[in-house]
Length: 309
Length: 254
Picture (cartoon, helix red, strand yellow):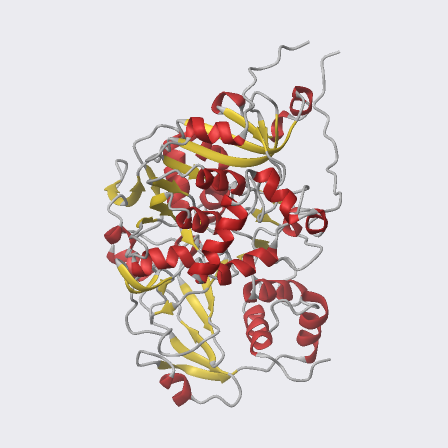
């Protein structure tokens, strides 16, 4: 029998209390799929302040963290409510400094991906074929142009990002933190490896044997993970492939909620501050609601890893 | 069958015809998806649609609502990580046509999707680049579909250049990989340019639209190409496929 790895399971409350501090740089990743919403809500409930949030697609959870007063600076490559509209709080902060200004560092998607790649590998910079002729380098001095040491070419580079903590949501992990994701895997592994500490929130904590039966599906190995937290439905309103579908109606509703300050405050009071934790949030939505996001089965063919006879 | 053809239908059909003979297309959700799906059934049967979320060769059971819709994953041929999608597929040069939209476009096909007004204190904060800058820099060519053709969108000078075309890249001392924008499809007609050094010219009009109308709606002195044509209206067959096979529930065919 193989020995089990160290048990890193914690409650979400304890994980956020232990690893997210005022003033920290916090990365939340998940590209449309598996967005760590429950973790964002817990950060708001615990009243963190002056965070620098790094997130490629700053969407609803970022708008909520802004409204919760948690964020001083945002580092992002897309700020919008996916294709469903606008982020009201983000736009008030940037367009009117209301209730206070937001420091904003803008990149393109691959620019931010390259910052994670540099961060994960502890490299001083990372080159990419973007930014030539764009106005972005003029408003973001971190984007710089260098001469290739191997020819007469010039190329733009971006600096590494090394968050104090990265938080991701995933389908399943074992108790030590070997984390499995299927469907869109985004930039989660790079964001975890770039960070000093990492919290993985999962739909299910599974037995070690489940992970070991399919090691290629492990996107993040346990040695990169500090806390494993089981929070079913913790990615709502985004989706978890094979577990529940995206709540498209909520995405469409968010533009209206966040455009109106009073509506937004009431929503935060009821759904974030008014729930003790994500379990209460899930229960408050009700089983009938969750039935509407249920998905059917589409199993993959098993693969044969083989074993020595 | 609906008898009145909507603007969305016309734009989708015209864009689909431009994909004839293309192999790989990088498409967002909405009109580009409709155009690519229709082209797959008509002029480009071997077309592979690649999504920014990492999906290659999607076979969705339902029309996707986002570029990351779960229905794009189940049954897809490949799902790549973001470093692989942006690094190997896009920057590696595997995309024939990229589809982009923008708030503003100039005569060289440079795009703004970041701000209206000054970046530091914008009148309107828009979503920003996302992957648009990489699509522009690395696709062999770029098609733009603009729902609105007016001087606020077709501008003499961009408020901010988010996604620069090859001319601006060259000025910055970097050799571009692709041609930049080659086609702009609008409710009035088609603007086109051949590549670096060339500006967008009017090359086709929808039936009933005049050159003067197109010029009035463009914020720079719009030149007319030598062989200005009238766009063939959507055929019965194209409309039937679009309405019955591509978007039967009229999710995007508004």
